[in-house]
Amino acid sequence: MEELRLVVGLAHATPKAILNLISEDGQTYTVSDHPGSDFTPCELRRMISISLCPSRPNFVSWIKDFEITGSVEYKGGGIFQSQRDGISHRIFSTLLRPELVFDLLDATDIEGISQEPVDALLTPDPILGVTTITISVGRSTQEAELDELAVIAHSACLVKEMSLSLDRSASNNRDKEPVRKNSDFPK
Image (cartoon, rainbow, N blue to C red; front, side, top):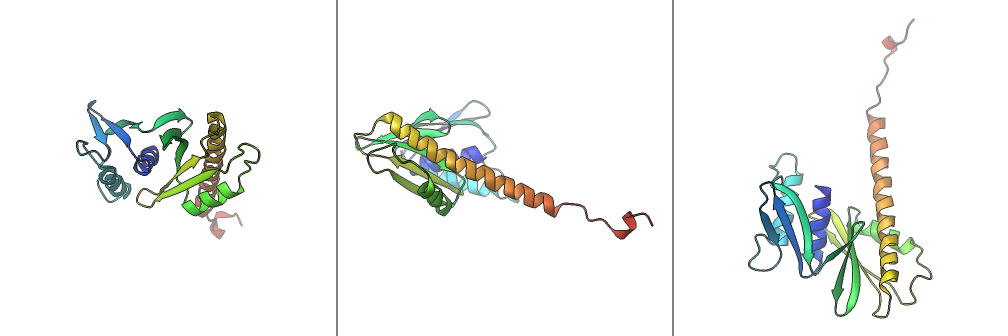
C-alpha cells in the first residue's frame, strides 16, 4: 500500500501524469484528469485513504500492479522525470512530512554539482500522507547533474525514512518487553 500511496501522490502532483491500474483479472483502469478516465486522481486518493483505516473496507485490494505514464517517465530507483516549459524535472515521493523534507534538503551537501540555483518544490498530500518533491535547475543544466541532485535528495529522504522506522520499531519493542514479577525469582 505504501508504494501505491507514493505513486498516486506523485501522479496527483504532476500535471498530465497518467496512472494505469492493473486489476487481479488483468483489466487496466486509467487514472487521470481526462474526462474519459476510469478514475480521477482525487477519487483514487479518497479510496486509498479510506482503505488505510483498519475499520473500513479495503477499496484498493483489487489493484495487482500499476504504472505511471503520460508526462512522467520512470528513471529508476524511485525517481521519475518530466519536462515542463522546456525545463527538465526529477520527481519522487516520500512518506516524510514536508517540514522534515525541507530540513533534509536544506542540510544536504550539493556544493559544486550545479552552477545554477537548484529548485525543489515540495507538494504535501495530507490525504495520502506523502510529500512529492520536484527538483529542477535552469535550462543549461546537464541531465546527469539533475540526476545526481535527485539521487542525493531522494537518498537523504530514504535514509531518514529508515531511521524513523527503526526508531519506531525500537520504541515498540521497549514497550513490549516483559516485566518480571518478584515471583519469577527463586527465593
